[in-house]
Length: 517
Ligand code: XMP
Image (cartoon, rainbow, N blue to C red; front, side, top):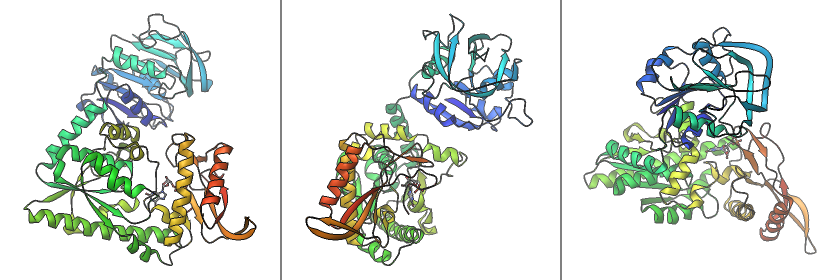
C-alpha cells in the first residue's frame, strides 16, 4: 500500500487515483494521523499531498521527521514538498513569486531518476506562494522554473523525492510519468494492482466474512449496487438474494435492465417487488419536492423491509440464517466520513438504516476501497452490460422529482417517452461520457400555446437539463451541439403527445441545482 497523507489538498483523492492508475494500491489518511499509525500499515511508500497552509505559518501541519527516519520511500507534492524540505533541513521562503497554472519547467540534472527519459522542457501545473529556496542536505535539485530555483529534488539513496508542481493533474504534461518514476524506480513498487486482483481479493474477503450465512442486497438500477451484488454473487453464489423494488419511477427500460440483463449476466436470484401502484397512490396530491422525497423514502423502507422479511423467512424454512446486507458504499464516502468502519453516508432513500431493530444485518461493503471509475472497471470485468456500468447518476426518487407538479401515471408515461428520446439522441451523438447527466423535466403545471398541423395546441413544456460536472457538487450547463438539440426538440414535439415545447436550461450550479426539485 502507498499511503497518501492529505494536508487538505483539493487534489488528494486525485493523487490516490493516479497511484492506482499506476497499478499500485493506495489509500488516503488525514495529516493528523500519528506517524506510528502510518508506519504500522507498512507502506511501500508515503506521498505527502499539497495543502492550503504555509509551512512557516503558526499551526501549520508539519511533517514529523520520524516519518523519514523510518526508511520508507517518500514523495512530497507542493505543500508536501515544502514540508519535506523543511523537516529535513532545507529552506522554504515566501519569495514573493507565486506561480499559478501552466508553467514551463526545465530539467537541470541529466541523470535525474524522476525525469528519466522525459523532455528537458515541459509544462507543469503550479499553484503555490511559498517556495523551496534550498534543498536539504543529500538531495539533488533536478528541475527549476523561471521563478522557482528548486522545483524538484531527489535523494535516490534514501529513496526520497519531491516536486513543487502537481503531477496528478492532467495539465502537467508528464506528471503521471514523474509519479511512476518515483513509484517504480525510486520506491521500488511493482505495478501489480489490477481489477482482476481486486476481484480475487474481494471474493476471498466476502467468503471469509459471510461464511455459510445468507445475504440480501437491494438493487436500485444504479452502478454501485449492481457491481456490489455481482461481486457477492461471484463470491457466495446461491447464498445471495437480491431484492429489486420496482416503484415505477425509473426511466424507460431500466427495470428490464435489472430484471433481465443483470440477471442474465450474473445469474443472481432476484426477488422483484412490483409496487408502482402503491407509490402512485402514496404520491397522489403531493406536489412539494421534499414531501415527495419523504413519501418515497417511507414507502421504500416499508416495501424493502417486507421483502427482506420474506427472504429471511424463506431462508429460515431451510434452516439458514440471513445475516448480511450488501451495500455499494464507495471509497470517497468512506474518506469523507472519516474513514472509520461502518460510517459511510448511505444515499437518501436507499438508506436501509431505517430498518427496525429485529431486522438488523451486518454490512458487506465490497466497494469500500474503490473509486467510481474503478467500480465501473470491476463491473465490466465481471461481465455486466455497458448500459448498467456506464449508467449516468439518477436520483433515488426517480422521475417523481422530474415532474414539477403532481405525479400521475399519464405524466410518468409522457416523461419516460421524452426522456428516452433525449437519451437516444445524446447517445447517438456520442455525448454520454461528456455529459454528467441530463435530467429531462416535465413542467406539468405549465401550459403554453402551440400550433401543430393547422390546429392550436395547449400543451406542457419539457426542459432539457444537460450538465457537465465532476462530482455533482458544482456543475455547468453542458454545451450540447445545436444540431443534437434540434433533433431532440423535433422528435419530442413530434412523438410525445401533449408536449408542444422543449426548452434548454442554461443555469450553472450554483445557483441552480441539477434537478428541478
Ligand atoms: P442536485 O439537484 O442537488 O443534485 O444538484 C445533485 C445530484 O444528486 C442527485 N439527486 C438525488 N439523488 N436522491 C438521490 O439519490 C435524491 O433525493 C436526489 N436529489 C438529487 C442528482 O440527480 C444529482 O446527480
